[in-house]
Amino acid sequence: MNDIFNFKRFGLLFRKTILERPVQLMGITGLILTATLVIYALCLYFISFQPAQNMAFIWGLVGGGCFLSSVVFGYFNTNAQGSAYLTLPASAFEKWLCGILFVGIFFLCTFLAFYKLIDMGFVTAYRNGLDKNNPAYKELYNSVQYYPLDNNNIAKQSAMLFFNFTGAMMVGSLYFNRIAAIKTALVYFAALAIIYFLNLLLAYSFFQNVDGAFPFHNIFIRAGNDNGSIELPSSFSNITYYFFAFIIPGILWITTLIRLREKEI
Amino acid sequence: MIEFNNLSFGYTRKKLLYKNLSLNIAAGSIYGLLGKNGAGKSTLLKNMVGTLFPVEGEIFVDGMVPGKRRPSFLQTIYYIAEDVYVPPLTIKRYKNLFAPFYPKFSEQSFYQYLDVLDVNVDGKLNKLSFGQQKKFVIAFALACNTKVLLMDEPTNGLDIPSKTQFRKLIASVMYDDKIIFISTHQVRDLENMIDNIIIVDNGDLLLHSSISNIADKLCFKTVSEIPVGAKVLYEEKMLKGTAVVMENINGEDSKLNLEQLFNGVTENPGITKELFSIN
Image 1: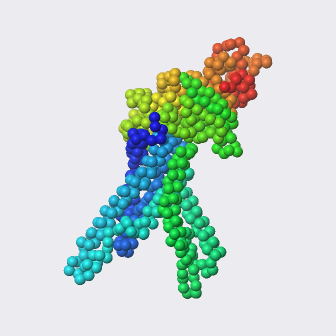
Image 2: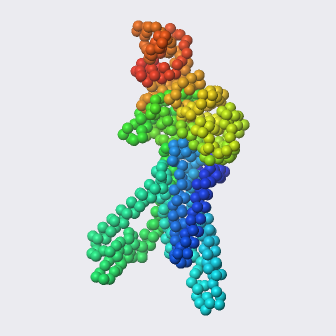
Image 3: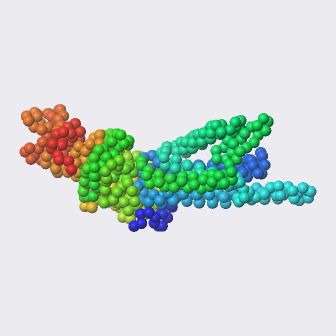
């Protein structure tokens, strides 16, 4: 018997994972999609198109992804549930792959498809509502574009945050048995705060009149009434980007597997 | 079949619950694991199923290491925790989703056990009472036909008729290649069911013996006066004399009283060790 991966067993496990907690997994996915639609509509109504597109994308993908990833391995609220999960005859790798596929593939694809759909709907509705006889028709028509996923810095940053935060949430849900999402968020924000203030302290020790500093990015300097910023050289900037975009999420997602293998309850 | 080699376990490395525990458990028996609350019964079961890992030493179950939690191992063992978990599924849905993981699962036996235990519902399992949920999980576990069945306080939450049915069911599913391990602090629930007893207290193995060996070595009776010089494991004043558990010097036949035995062993571990050589 293959104790690492068996296709049939994995199929059974994936089916069981989805159907055992349909309300939690499919329900939360549905809730996230609905929330994305509501955020888009509200921001559009109160602000304008571009903020609506960005807000819905960021909160739906990053916020929703965090929420979902905190429950995907959330079997450890009770000793009985945790034991039932750990002793189910499937390998740790298969159990991990189930969670990873759900968050990293199923949710991501569903969200992107849904987002594309609502974005097209809102943009098309806007364009169809324009008066073709209006002299500014072309300008108004072109002022609103479909949300681009490539060559879009916000989408790129959101994807980076998605993979970092979901990884952290999955690891956290395997470390903390109860209210894992809140505890993980607290630990994560505490770590970010420590990094931010240590970086600021370091900036103060090297420069005078420091106005602010973002770790691994730049330092704002005030000189009289003027402000300036010292940025990382592009070669270092690229390194930090790859570090946060690939290495940290990779470490977090693999830590989930290691933690799942070593989980005790 | 289950082998503990110098097992040490503790929730912290500094404070070990079990120290250098060595124990061999053979197939073909129903074991009663007895101990007070917090004695370490559940901990021992969790080490056997691989949801807790030993700090030192090894455990082998059917030649496999539980801590690795390999599917080939998990197919051979079923663990029922004290507080059962059932998802919001119907019986049929649960069976369809979980049974395929156990190659020896018998659908016919499953429905038969449910019938015997009087669990028959069309609704979702999580809406059942705790006792009904527990009976459902017991029926499913028995139907999985695993070589090792570990049950942590299985009779908690069961009513009196269900306890009787439970005892009958356990006796009916016992085969030579199987081990059933029942942990409880309600010792009376195991009477007439188990054929081996393990008693633990504060991480110490106080007794590991078969019922027949206990009957050979100990005598359970009520006396008006305790014989002089007798090695008495336990005594309790009753209306019609004193109930005693004492060394069986004359080879008397007596009915085993688990509760008295348990009290005697936990109160007098020294005498117990003199009378029984612990494996």
